Image 1 (cartoon, protein in one colour):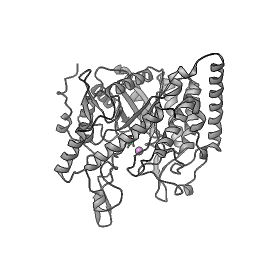
Image 2 (cartoon, rainbow, N blue to C red):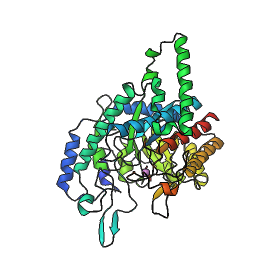
Image 3 (cartoon, helix red, strand yellow):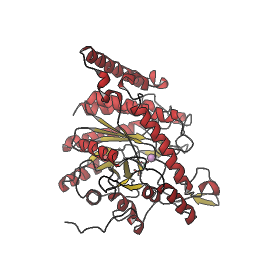
Image 4 (cartoon, protein in one colour):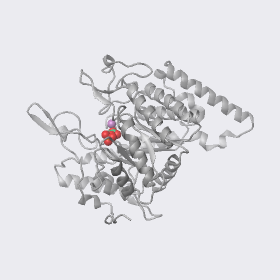
Length: 451
Ligand code: PEP
Ligand code: CO
């Protein structure tokens, strides 16, 4: 037995070092925002989080696949229904491509309805003579390089809560109210994707699905009664970075007495805040939600095991999703050691691949981008590694948008460096557009169907 860590409560993280927090300029503002959040209803329920854990348990046991996808950072300025609907469309399309090819259920989790905070490599940004707080995402401050915009404003946490609530409300309506009905499988193909090779390939799958449903109906199966055909379980997640926000939305489940962070179904710990004795690990170990943790190249297998044991002492399947984000050239060298170490420790985890964050670079024209081929290469290695170790490559963690953006290079419609500036709208990292996302899904579907 490991020595017991001290007792947990929703504020026990405050005795630890919390990295990546803004320098709040006004303690009263912060206290007011926290009080306002504490007074709000939860965004999700404990029962929903528990159900996600159980579905992720199936992924951990090799019976399902996790698709976690959405923006790098959501924006306060893009909150309309269309953007949310289009993001959902791409995720549903990817899930269809994956399920159809693999015959394996796909657990769908958005990086959405709360993904507002960004960890930064530099706390302060300097231009010329002027140094200001880095842009930390709309939950903290704003992008323009002025003292006013960059001042951390605690009231933004309350705004983030309200935008999360409206986004989640729309997602619930879309996924339970007819939009995600499998009879609408063609409608998720967007016009600008339709003409591309990927759009056509998707349309072919959609035709097959429609034919299969007509066949079942002709056989006398009452499709109207099959709720799985008409509704989708869609969960939301974000990086649990700004701890006063997470704490204020943490509530005790009246059924079990357990604590849940009711800001999202699933929370993950980023690559920069996963110190064993740090505040983020302390906070998250005590909430009942399923947790993700990024595994980058600077973590050793022994540290990964210690972290997983701290976060999941009961070894509950589905509680921990490890999100490997190593880079196409490093994954083969680094990932197997982590998988082996966890296996030896007897820890049951979900392994998923974030092929985005280890493959970012800046062009000569100073634009942050990623190559589709690098992303694909990392995913391919991820599958090969698991195949050779006899473990389950459990999922994909992607930054994408439903818009026709030009942020990543290559893919089905071959975006080149000179195209990047055409429609680059990400507030933070470059995302796959709808067609590149589908392209990736079809490749992954092939890997899935071969195992
Ligand atoms: C992210 O997922 O947007 C992110 C910042 O990732 P990481 O913590 O892996 O760098
Ligand atoms: Co990112």
